[in-house]
Length: 182
Image (cartoon, rainbow, N blue to C red; front, side, top):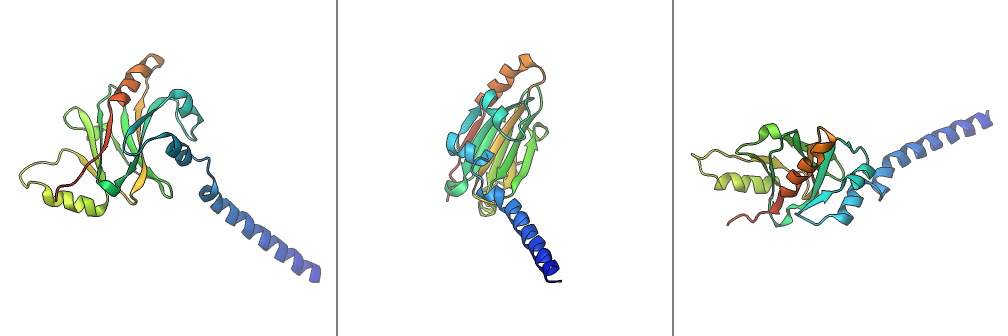
């Protein structure tokens, strides 16, 4: 009987330690996509990701050309503007803890480009107060759960010869921090 109690206790402790280590691993690992991109990309600026580098990122699809904007909303909202492509275009917003929290595709584009403003809720409230009542809002506004994160711009490459066009669209993309007027 005593050996059975020790066996059950051993199984329970082993199970708890395995579950705890499984949940702690993403927080402790430093070779995740965020860590790699933080070391290689500037803040509030577009960094084009070469095809060879993109293949090394987890869950990367070779049918997409990628660019990344590592953002910090501490100095103001972020504006991401990407000219429309002949193929599918999307901007994905992610933060370290939650992963992807929002995405926008080229279907939301107006005026020949996809224009997105990412801001904290306080900044969005301030932007809304500055809006003129009779003027339509042309950009997509997205609230960010945290001030730091990544904006990943993806352009679909429909055939091998289309990669250059997709990469040209990414090179024209803009990612800038904006200062709100008082």
